[in-house]
Length: 396
Length: 200
Image 1 (tube, rainbow over the protein chains, first blue to last red):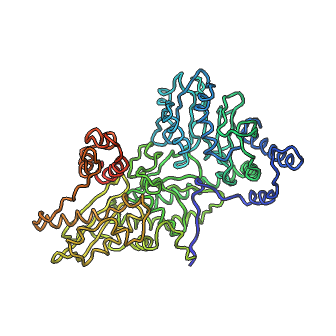
Image 2: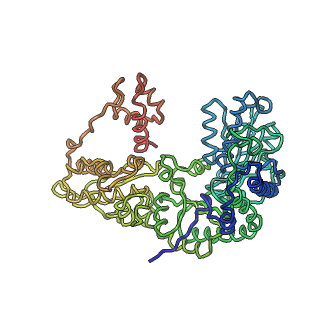
């Protein structure tokens, strides 16, 4: 018997859009180095520069402000480590500022990078979030000072989907003379955005979250703002990122962005419907749950639920055996004893963090998929709770 | 290729995960002869083991757990292992014995999810207590962790029970690792294990 396969882990990565795959396959033979002066090279380069223009237009940026990188983690590392690089290079951030402020719910590529910078002597402050995962503006105002070089706050959270008010946060940063970066990896392709309206100095995103290939992304760096490369060794990207350009990846990303522009409005509408269906179904069929994240200001594809008394990894693996791919904030999936730092920061407590499951949907998710999840999930939760030492609800 | 190797754990773990044996379903009407509970919800694993004993031999073993797949599988297999086993022998089962039965487990899973042996030991101690034979309860032999300051695993356990949660706190209380520092890794591993077991 073949069971139904349901992929609901789009925030981890998305499948390649068939059109992206097609474009990439057709481009497979473009081997020339885009930095070479000959015709072979110029032809490829030309194509990549058109893509740079398209992506710039998509973000409301200028082409020279779009830097191609190997993805979100590299873009994030580049921005944060500029502080250390600036100090090392004898350069400086405006006013000799050295401190970083970030939020308590960032992606590990921000979290662990600022921890590394802290270990090297940079002062790092973590801004609190409320129970929905929204940045605590009062706390940000307390932390920010004339020493703050950079404020980095993620646009939308990968685990709980909460969306921040980026223009308001960047206004605070700028009001205090600090620069502002947003990790928009989960937002680009889901939320229309314009870097002018957002008023950000730096922005990161990754192609594989919007149906593009893995290993390629963008760093938007506003003209006139400090820039120190993370990767030295070539004049590519105007000396801001060395390494032979990833032609095939960039071509795939370009197509993915083009398609996102066309498909986003309709897809968003459909995803809202699917999320509401899933949420309503879970609330109706399964007792003793907590919905995590902001009720309205949240990604339309992301639903995060804690099932009381049911440990997340067990739920994930039982669902996996039913053909459903999900993700959990349980410690067991991470190899540490600590559950999701995001959920802990929202104050849900360790038990509910261990019992959290993330459903993230995308363009291939159907109503039938949602209904299948709603068919198998209640049975799985019931069985896990039946063996639980801490659940005394429905099975007693 | 069978395809089963693609799963996260071994086939035996998978089998016990899919069909856990001996779950304690009707706790109130299960008149056990001994019961033990260990673990900490905050760390993501808690385990309860209940046994029935006749003539100092375990006749039935039931359990409950709040935990991941390997916690479920390891307790399930333990409950099968001990049926018909003399209490005294069951008292000496180690996590390694359980892992051996399961085939293998990733190293980081062993100390956080294999709690069944401890829960069983507590259940047996409860049985001894109920039958008035607390003399049978063995204080585990202490192992020296810090050679320089002569600090044992029991000292670390005590420190955690008294509230220490970080290596620095442990050092401050016991002076462990304050001379050559070679024991740090070992001590930190035990510290995490005991916080997992006894921490709030």
